Amino acid sequence: MSAISANTKKCECDGSGWVSVPGTNMVKQCACQNEAALKRRMERLVEQSGLMGSLREKTFDNYHPKTPKQKRARDEMTRDGSFFLIGLPGRGKTHLLAASVNAAMGQGVSAAFFSAPWLLQKIREDIMASEKLQILENCCEIEYLAIDDLGKEKPSDTVQEKLFMIFDRREILGLRTSVTSNYDPETLSRERLDGAIVSRLLGMCQVLFLDGDDYRGKRG
Ligand SMILES: [Zn+2]
Image (cartoon, rainbow, N blue to C red; front, side, top):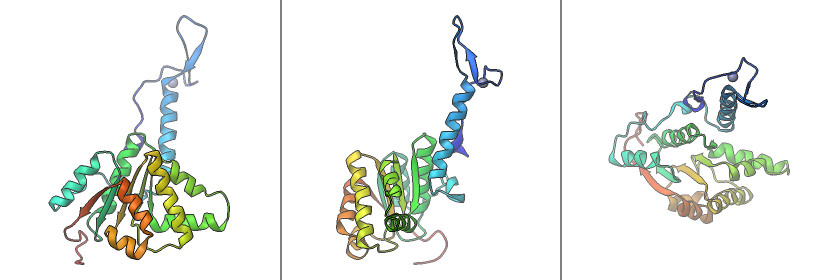
């Protein structure tokens, strides 16, 4: 997995993890230990993320655009930024979103990928447990947050309030945030989510439309 590529500094210890500093009686950690720490950090990032199975293999290179808009969306997303990807099912929104998360993790950025229904369910569970809102805190802190399929369900006002807090906080902190939706912003704010959430997203994200046919071979 590319997200767990270790550095190539070579080991100079005898397996103890320590090497002596020449000319002193001090020791320092061997390069092999940095490598192990990096590997552990990267593994934690992958675990934090909801990127499972084939989603981990999605890259910008293995996304094959079929229309100029799809190509533009891919090219734009290779630049680090926040994106609001809109398109009907089967145009590759999830692929591009997963690719952006994989790319970020490959650069050592803490990143998480959540499907919107899963995230909303976690927020509901946190609220029900009336504990500290752990998922909310994580979503506010992670360097890159990607939410797939926003608008698939219409959450309660309480849940929407938390969702707004996440986006609001991230905008203030200047943290990268990307979402995908089957709905255009107008429909999303009219039928699925509070207008304040949508307008916050429009303020922080570059909007990209994915047109074309359904890659799964189904038509509309
Ligand atoms: Zn070593």
